[in-house]
Amino acid sequence: MTDENTQAYTVNGDGSISVKMEGKTIKYVLESDLGAVKVQLKDKESEVSKLQVELAGTNTKYDTAHQEVLQERAAKELLEKDAKEGLALKTKVTELETKMADITKVSGETATKLTEQLKSILKTSYKIDDAKLVDKALPELEQIHNALQLTGVMPAPANYDGAGGGSGGAGSLEGKSPLALATMGFDQKK
Image 1 (cartoon, rainbow, N blue to C red):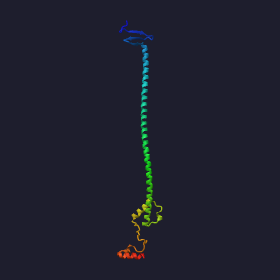
Image 2: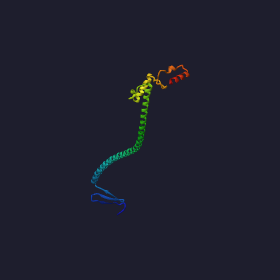
Image 3: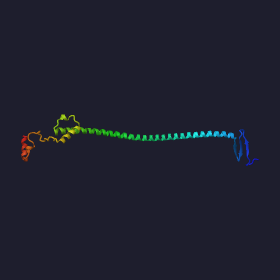
Image 4: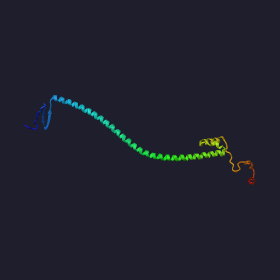
């Protein structure tokens, strides 16, 4: 009687029954064994839950570490870019320092020339003694010159005749004709 609709069963040594139906074997176990399997299943479920929690924590740690790695890479790339720009800026700074040194040198030379010219003006025009101007720097000389101009002190008149001043002057020449002036000039040279 081996018909496809017939069922063949086997009693196993552990008390379970195996039934063959439609080409498949189904195993029936005792209810007491089923309770033990349920307990084991609950233990496995709690173990699976624990492993899932650990996996979620590990995934979180992995994601955090991955973000840190990405941030470090970005920082490294930015640092490398800044380093390249830094080299260019260092070259530019060196060039600017050289130009600044040249400008400082020229500025110092110009300040020295201006100081000497201002001392000369104060000595010749305002008849200030050289001893009073020896230790004066450019800002002090400028203050002296400005003070003299503000107070209305007039520079000493220039003496262009080469006689070093003397008796005459512009007042004695007033009202004389050019011929008379020429005669006076001729007489003085003798």
